[in-house]
Image 1 (cartoon, helix red, strand yellow):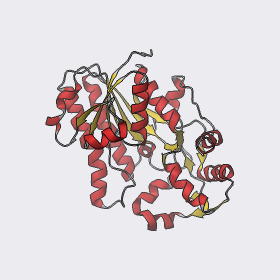
Image 2: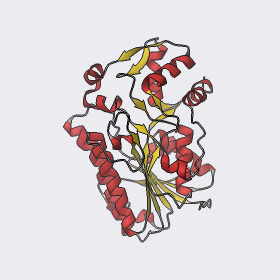
Image 3: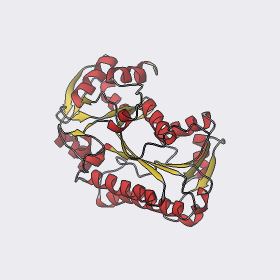
Amino acid sequence: MIFLMNKKIIITGATGLIGTRLCRTFIGRGDEVTVFTRNVESAKNILGTKINYVEWDYKNPSGWRDSFRNQDAIIHLAGANLFGKRWTNMYKKKIMESRELSTRNLVEAIKNSDSSKMVFISSSGVGYYGSTGENILTEESPAGNDFLAQVCKAWEYEVERASEFGLRTAMLRQGIVLASDGGALKKFLTPFNFFIGGSLGTGKQWFPWIHIDDLISIYLFILDNAEISGAVNVTSPGIARMNAFAKTLGKILNRPSILTVPGFALRILVGEAASTIVSSQRVIPKKLIDHSYKFKFEKLEEALKNLLMNNK
């Protein structure tokens, strides 16, 4: 059953690519949005004045634990940038803690606020599965064993704890988000613009992608659909291999796509994170299909044309 009444929604990580789009969308449809942020003034400059702001230190709940009363939902996007720095032991600890501890403290605060009617929606990632080659991955597939899989598993575990006291929870295992104004696509464009574009790794690995418009629509779809809970694969049904992605991108840009960046070169450039960049995840959005979500962009070429041709 889908409920479309206006909602009161808390968002963490709201100043990023996904968060800014969600805030604009929620405000546009008449929802009341409260943003948890480390820097209120900076967030206001990005998101505007039609939003409520709460100063948020995820390590210290005392300053914000009373903000959940009469709220309908929390959307948790916050977490240290996975590729912001090389994965030293210290930075890996920050990546894990910023997701695991922040979620744990949010759940505890909600538990003590008598807000059992809320829905808790958290971002996660297809990194949950690790690199699995040709295996078809649905929401029932097991977690992988590498670092990113451990992060996603720990993150989702903390979210699921909220279901123990009656909250509907959903963890969105997002694929690679394609957007014209940021994210992975912008990084891919640079070498193509210099006529040195191509695939990463062998090119044979599966490349689970999602158009930003579908991603935002899926957040709303899950928020408004009380029948959806648990893990949700958020990828296009039209999954492609890396070399097909690079070839399609080159075709649209009218640039060659003949070069490759081998795995060992990526490891020199970015360290341990290279294994994630060239991982293969053949992810199927089974739960979304089963609940009749209608994708706006199922084919990679249509998605890339929309993002690149309409934003010249």
